[in-house]
Length: 408
Ligand code: AMP
Ligand code: MG
Image (tube, rainbow, N blue to C red; front, side, top):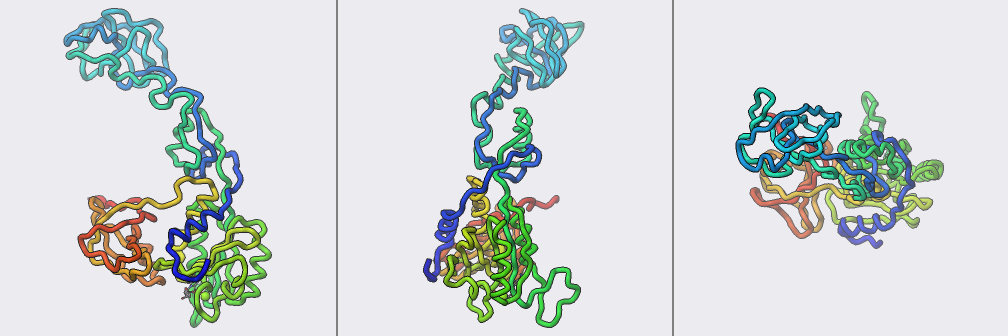
């Protein structure tokens, strides 16, 4: 790839085309949340397995309740988990609880609220159509059908779905092992009480380690190297073997000390300029056959580049079919400005969760990580657009929005 400004989408397509799928593992289903299902789960059972009642009420024959005011003789009572010992005949009803199997003869349930009962009789006030409040066998899952598509990232809901089918083992992608390294002579460990003159704490590496986990990977801490290409080279050589992906931060742009560039220029790694703000410089290629991401140094650039390029790649390596964060249309709550030659990812917060009205979280320089921490989403302004005016619609990418509504 040459060094002109490249559209982010084109860069992502290129990256995705080069990723390879990791191997499969079999896991206990309760440990598979966040993991990507390798193949479709096809049910060999019906759920529910038998016709049962959706309500507490009376199991009846529909022909008995075609007209309002039917009065029926109450036989037994069927709690959930028990099967009626007899069937429901003409003019008869059985008291039934939610989830209890429908007795033979009955085809309809009348809610207890719609009846009056006394002396072993029940009166049904109005006409009730056949099949009312009956959950048919296979009404949830029909035997032979796909219940969860392959490539789905499993959630706690899927754990419940699998439990209902008795499928307590699942085959999922293994977690890609992702080496994470930070570069820069100015960095000190986060636990440093007071960084020396000219020094700052390393915020990218711990952030990336945890972002890797969020994308289903295992973050392998390769530590920090200064701006010495030989040391960087030594660490990469030592540690790359057991990894699926390597990510570094810093040292990929135009500075005199850009260590990643100094080491890898002329290798199988391309130094790209992406039409994206922040996150313009990006190195991508292969080191010893493994995908290598050289992300920028500024922490917000790291966030955006990871989100746009590394995260989809990690998900693709796991065979996930959905690789991108959701986008919705919201409303700019103030004017938002952008450099029209680049696609902008402006960090915004939601001030009206009904209309998705957003405002900037403040300083939009790529070093202002605290603003990204206050953001609910990115406002994405495409190439060619210089501003979005207050009140106009704007595309939002939900990179973290979960709870955005406050309790009144
Ligand atoms: P670089 O691309 O290496 O020139 O870094 C760009 C900017 O990001 C500089 O201000 C660096 O100090 C800063 N930076 C680089 N790496 C980190 C890091 N791991 N944590 C926090 N800031 C960083
Ligand atoms: Mg640097």
